[in-house]
Length: 352
Ligand code: ADP
Image 1 (cartoon, helix red, strand yellow):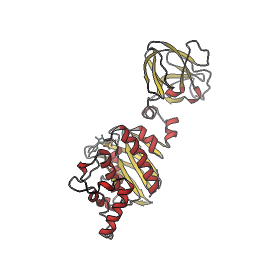
Image 2 (tube, rainbow, N blue to C red):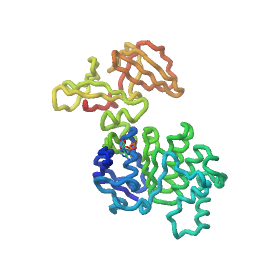
Image 3 (tube, helix red, strand yellow):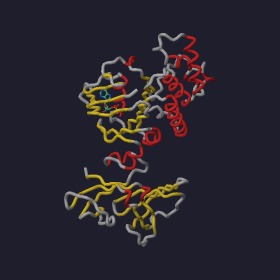
Image 4 (cartoon, rainbow, N blue to C red):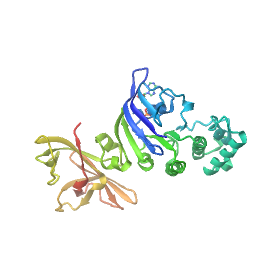
């Protein structure tokens, strides 16, 4: 099912404008992620699509039909919440069966068969007679997923479904949810504040800030060409280094006087203030006096040796920068190092 939002806004009764003028088309079978910090309007947007909140302004279309006033039960969608919302007094089987409550014409035997099939697919068959409190967090999450997918609704909405799981389980569940969605061919709209979930699961990501869309695109488009400094610092860990500077006569000069080589840029004014964005993996540590094209001397402030890579924080005056090095790089704190920049990979942003 294709979902369109046209100029959609939400103003709550207390005059909070939670969502402002959102325009987006979510294609059938797409894994679409709503990403942004807490309070940016993700859940409000999801709840408007589900029919759990009124749309103040704008149009919601489902497969081309206006759906603003459709009852939630008529929208052909299932939902998975952060707290799983399982019924504690019902067994796993009864909880999953609840996902079929809309199927008035299906016999009890058919429903039980379907429930068993889904439980088997999700590795839950031995837990069907247990109550939710007798399950681990990961198993409970699987029951919530099973209850959503058993309905075979063409759209599934998920609101931070992995935030209560530990890191290892989260990594496994990311893969499981993505594979399940592709296998079933359903449209997924997935809310998260975790950029790793967004990058690894999304076919497309929409980044929100204060209820406004900042950028919509494929994960790598957003990573490589963020539309502004907010998106640049929200995607990627450690975040993109953002350094104030200017373009003067076609050359980028960082604050402090460092010249980023002989790059040529189109510019309207003779001096234009900018922010230069450099991903940590596009900086390399060199000898102090290495004579490569762009080479600054910094001192090492902090290091994190992670096994496969090392994150080094350097500083020059008040400017700090993150550098991602392959492998285990053990440089003493306080040592002076040179840094070279892969200048063809830098991003230029307007100063806000
Ligand atoms: P997110 O899911 O990104 O954390 P929400 O959609 O929950 O953001 O909230 C967006 C904004 O709307 C926040 O400022 C929040 O305080 C406000 N908000 C959410 N629900 C309500 C409500 N029922 N009444 C009034 N304001 C609300």
